[in-house]
Image (spheres, rainbow, N blue to C red):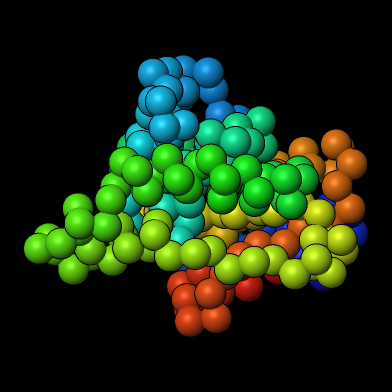
Length: 205
């Protein structure tokens, strides 16, 4: 299901109690102008670097591509915060086809220029894999998918976020914003081998 319209997605509105008793309070907010101070020439903002640093333990794909949403679609980016700072995000692109074209034609080349393949040589295995990730050609999204689900979404939370309700609130904010601006369906890109992300999205309902 496309999760839109939001009003018909009863699972998203059902907030089960957290697995462990907690008095943790969360702040859910849009991306603020202060988050984007000091944009770099490559189009990868400090907001991207800051959120990625805070979410350094997030699954690899969301962590690495978050910068493309912050640079190209900041108006559909929401941040989840707890007392320790940012701990989750929801990012979307209203028109996925145009977003992906711009990502591949401008954002990725800038990132590849900043992080050439030889940069990962001789470093830690994780660093090498991260650099090579940006130099791999992204998979194309089939046109039938783009026609039926014109918007792209991506969500992620830090491991310390145990309350599924917080993740669902993130999803609701993003889906509501996309729907209000004319979206009729969304999709997300998840590797079939990424069990952590598959589990995360399945828990959203």
